[in-house]
Amino acid sequence: MDKEKLKTKFAEDKEKFKRKKHWIKPIFVVTILIILQVFLFVWVYNKFTARINIVNSFWTIIRFILIIYILNLDKPMDYRMAWIIPIAALPFFGIALYLLLEIIPGPKQLSRRLKRIKSVNMQHLEQDPEIHEEIISHKNIDYGLDRYLNNIAGYPIYKNSKLDYFTQGEDYYKSLMEDIKQAKDFIFIEFFIIKPGKMLDSILDLLEEKVLEGVDVRFMYDGTNDYHIPSDYKAYLESRGLEVVVFAPVLPILSTYHNNRDHRKIISIDNKIAYTGGLNLADEYINEIDRFGHWKDNGLRVEGDAVRSFTVMFLNLWELSNGKEYTLERYLNENHDTISNAFVQPYDDSPNDSETVGENVYVDILNQAKDYCYIMTPYLIPSDRVINAIKFAGKRGVDVRLMMPGRPDKKIPFCMSRSYYQGLIESGVKIYEYTPGFLHSKSFVSDDKTSVVGTVNLDFRSLHLHYENGILVYDEDFAWTLKNDFIDTQRLCQEITLSSYKDLSIFYRLAGKMLRILAPLM
Image (cartoon, rainbow, N blue to C red):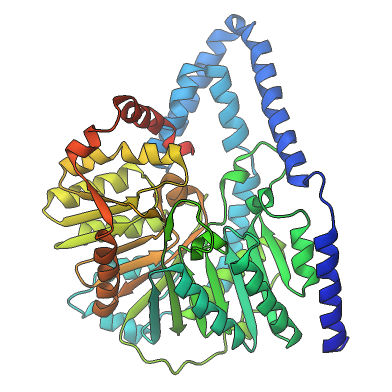
């Protein structure tokens, strides 16, 4: 089919989709089936409790064995305690729920498949020994973290990579549009949230043009988007010439399979340019619509050798999702002329394995900090490791500043986040809330040398349950860029002192502390 006929077909398919009526979204049917399973589970529980005394001794033994088993798991203690409490308080219900949600094989099979994929694909990412030797001899770089990300996570550190940092979604969007227009070979796109509107629709229009030019366009989004995008949206995207994968579609089963979402934000263009950061493809991220006041976010454009890691990251999860094998050499042949002295190390993090890469990076930066560590995060529901590292840095005299939203997108997580404020402030940590609206940036910067930008929030779900990605940078100029962004944004914030925290309603503060028991399960 020639280009003009293909263009006409895309236009016709687009109009058919717009005219199509969606009376009942399939995702709601799936949700109803999951809810019915919950009711069935409760009904069985109620039936069984009538005879619970008959087998009370049996359940006591099972409960004891299961608690010992959970205590010995290689998982954070707060996560283990979140299971031990319901098992101890409601034996049958807690045990049955744990067996149903944690022992079910689906997530573990997914983890094994990803491990097999990475065992092949990660061989395409080799550490340049000269760069590694340069880092070891560099007096201002913690080469232990570089070595961890290379040896354990499998991602090398690069030098020949230019970085452009965006303090607002509007600038990120403008730059991305220009780079898509210049694409010649392929465009890989992966996002947690997509919503039809100015941002997504204009990008799709450009992608359709690139398809007509013969560019390989692949588009992946998380399955939970089915709750807010039109039905058959995947088919609509495919009708416009895109190759599309929905990561972990919501299935009519009660399972922790639904817990492990693709929270990553990755774009790779021709293996030359990559984008990452906090932004998703929805209009609130570029302040085209007002949901929670001004939306403050950040993004990063990478050009040069480090893009290779982003290309491999994308293809790992793409292969996991559609079950097909790919020859990666075809996408990794690009040579780069970019010149930069920054050390750049992209990485990702996967749930259901023994490595909490995102958490380990954050904790190591906090533990290595000597002068300051400035943190932007939209959520603060951390593990004990993270909260203790933040407090310990404050107690050591490090200037630790934590920036949070002033207007939350989710009130319950925000209430839980604030419950940590008192302990942090008493440890010497300064806390700021962004008064113009919602702050969605995720960044760490420390001691004018170490920086991280990516998708990892300071909440348990992001640190342990989601697929995430980030980029570690050792460079003074880039650190100053992030530091200046923090300081400029701080001028628009209200500092939360111990007295202003105590001005909050006692019931509000108590609710936040009580809700923390659910933090590892949210």
